[in-house]
Image (tube, rainbow, N blue to C red; front, top):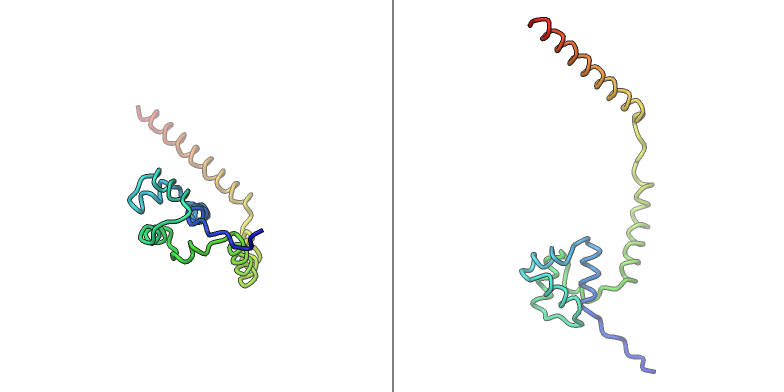
Length: 130
């Protein structure tokens, strides 16, 4: 068995990064002035020329090195480090209601009832005037 490392599949890295950023192939294609099919072909390619890679990196808001060195393990480590250093997102912010949601529903209902009463009163006045 060979101990050589498998070369990075740049197209697959582009695809994963694009997906992680929530971008569709069509959006990336428009950003770099290509067709969606061309982006699909690039994502299927093991290698991408430097000029095109730079355009793609700019459209994704990252560096070419980030694309070349992308790995799932690095992403997991990055997010674990981020969460550890900044605290749990939900635990570090006060996400409790400062009001009773039921009170707001009742308040809205009362406003709607009052609006209906005002309409009825207005229509009664209009009918009396005729």
